[in-house]
Length: 362
Image 1 (cartoon, rainbow, N blue to C red):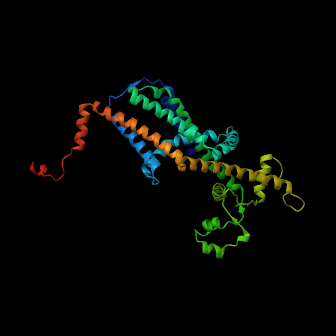
Image 2 (image 1 turned 90 degrees about the vertical axis):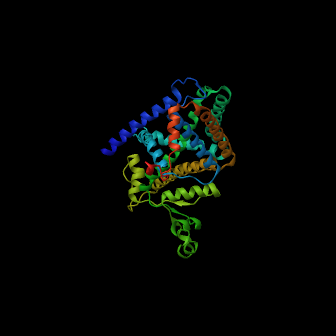
Image 3 (image 1 turned 180 degrees about the vertical axis):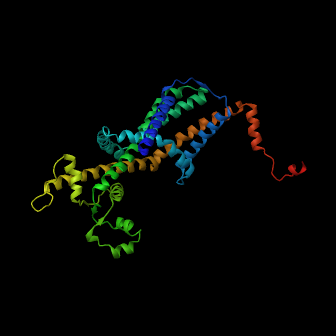
């Protein structure tokens, strides 16, 4: 009961946050804002924060070293928790969930050739909107010295939000489908693969794997591991492991008979009939194939988004121009801070040394 109440409260809060974001970002009317800004102390810290964010993005895109900040990550996760609760409540609603699952599978089928064969998706959803926005900001800042045209093209930012939501939904669907299917099947039995066997069973010790494991018997993998290594095989080697599913009597009942509201059909020897076995087997194979397709799509997206040099260079160029624009606004606006604010900041910077003897003299 408490969990349901908490989920309801988080969902309502998520709806309020989402509505406020759409309103302030895309709907409300914005008047032209002259540059330089008339800064307050809050405005100064906001501009500094914006510049720091773009510096961090450029750094992470330019180097393999990723800065980790547990406090910042926890803060961001907590901010987005209400939105996640709202999203999960909608997707798991009993009337919406069946359509949501079919739509995710349909979407993954449509995205499959786009993400694999060309970079149209990345330019459409990740590069083109940012190019339009940063071009408008550049013209506003360095040509007209006022924020005006950027407001006219803000709506194109919906493509950026849509891209993030699509990838987030694919990751959520992958995890959701795995969690649902895992309790219904035995550990999948797959053909032997030396590299996977060594990593899963023997912590990378190849000699021990060679001595202990019989390749003729194949190996068992948890569904989550199966999806992980099957994805690696497809993306890196364009091949698949051979999978053989083994089910118990109860699992047949759950996967097929209950779904179709029919009695469990045994033959004369108290065994499952071959027709039901085949139907159930194909149904589970299709579920695993759907999860695998989503997993491969996520892998290809992250591969292009994070490692393709051409796309990384475009992002670095875009975010560098963002940084230049906001740094310029900060530099030419800082003189507008009230004198008392400047004095306050100078006092913070110009503090007396703790051991300079002034206190003892008094």
